[in-house]
Image 1 (cartoon, rainbow, N blue to C red):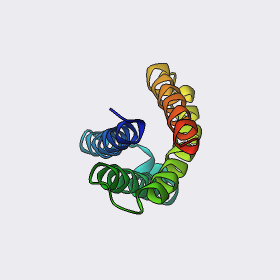
Image 2: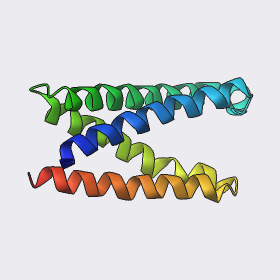
Image 3: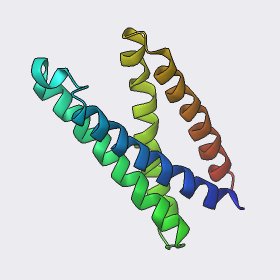
Image 4: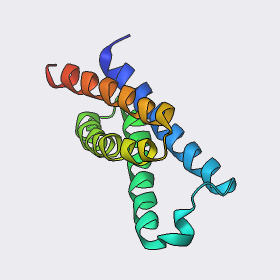
Length: 120
């Protein structure tokens, strides 16, 4: 399997995971900031949703070999990198180290894929 296809699969999985994570958190009442910091968390959720949608489009475009797939790849990975750098602190503050660690693992994978794609 080539690395671009692997990147597309990674993006599709992460984008789907992000949407599922927030849907489950919302349904379970696991976003207390909706009551205490509604504007801030709403904007954060919007950014996360935009990132997830970009990742899904990019993964799809890569897998169907669309002409502009590399451009979308870099934009979506930039959005993902921001999320993966900004989000672990929230979970670390809550002593949810397993989730914070997951973000760091995804960050390492994302960096590796970015480096690999930028050399091709």
